[in-house]
Amino acid sequence: MPAWSSSWQLPDQISDVLPSEARAIEELRRMLLDAARSYGYELVMPPLLEHLESLLTGTGEALGLQTFKLVDQLSGRTLGLRADSTPQVARIDAHLLNRQSVTRLCYCGPVLHTRADRPHATREPLQFGAEIFGHAGLEADLEVQCLAIEALRAAGFGPLQLDMADVRIVNALLAGAALSSSALGRIHAALASKDAAELAALLRAQAGLSAKAVAGLQALPQLYGDRTVLAEARRALAGIEGVAAALDELEHLDQQLAGLYPQLTLSFDLADLRGYAYYSGIRFAIYGSGEELARGGRYDEVGAVFGRKRPAAGFSLDLKELVSVLPARPLRPAVRAPWGADPQLRRAIAGLRAEGQTVVCVLPGHEHEVHEFECDRELVRVAEHWVVQALDRSA
Image (cartoon, rainbow, N blue to C red; front, side, top):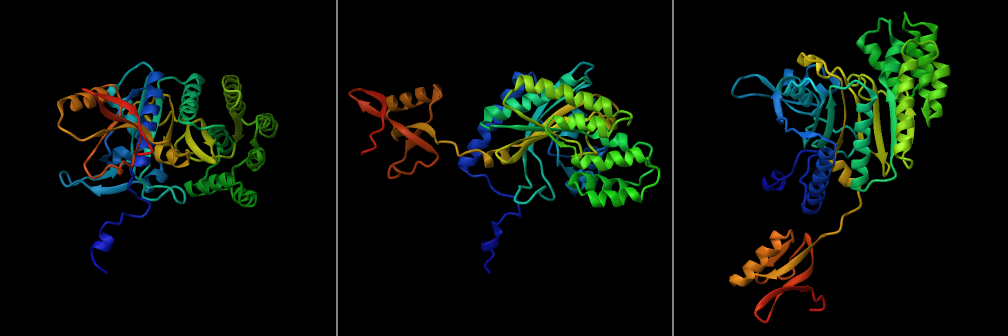
């Protein structure tokens, strides 16, 4: 096989982004950043790689497995290519900005994964996110949820469903039990997959769990659905310290969101433990077009490893994923102009571009080779002037 036949091939689940998709991604990126700015979020740009211990400290084993590692040729230290920007933004808040007040930050940039998190997904997501630091109240949770909803609606998604859970409920049920990290991981996996038989077997093998806690854990896989789940949870988990307060907060957010967005579908899944090692409270996911579009929640512990524990809430999404499920956008309207050295022609073209118009100068012999733009007008000479006219498609 000749060398050229494979030298251009990219690694699995890594791909080039071609013009139409790239244009859609860039337009979406600008729209999301503008939405974040309208809420007062400041843009930061963390580096793509940094020392591994800084990148992964406190993030849990799952993120470590997703992170590419390499050796720095200058220092000999191990570096990591970021798999998630949130820890970096927490580091910026903790060490570089070091503000005492509320800080709102947003970001947008590529992350790299050693393995795609689901079939057919890319290993190079373009991650957009927004984080608010310094406020422990539910106002911060509600703000990031509202920003995520409104950004997705502006992007063209709808109807939307927002699903909520709270890792404190499972933590309260497991409090006081001396569980190994392996056993804890298996229990979390059984809860997340709603495998009642596996969960029952795992709980039988654990000493130190009260009968009330075991009954509560076994009830969790059935506690999903609309807001009636919260009332069911109050009955099934009664008497477990900390659960009532978590349910109160979920109910408060449910009421607020229902009032703000009457068309939004709200649901709950109290056994959903995705990111359990990361989140410290309420977590949420937003769905639309049959796909998960964004996820986020509260992670008050994320800055503790940097020596400055601050309340934090936020969300993130993958722009490539969003664009892949949005309807194809129409081509951008443009003006077709002839190629030439006429000073008046050049001034006319420059004036149109200064107005924000797209002007495509057609090179001689390539009159029908404009691919990315829909030329619906043309620049033509009328008497002594260059004017824009509707394109004569019959020509």
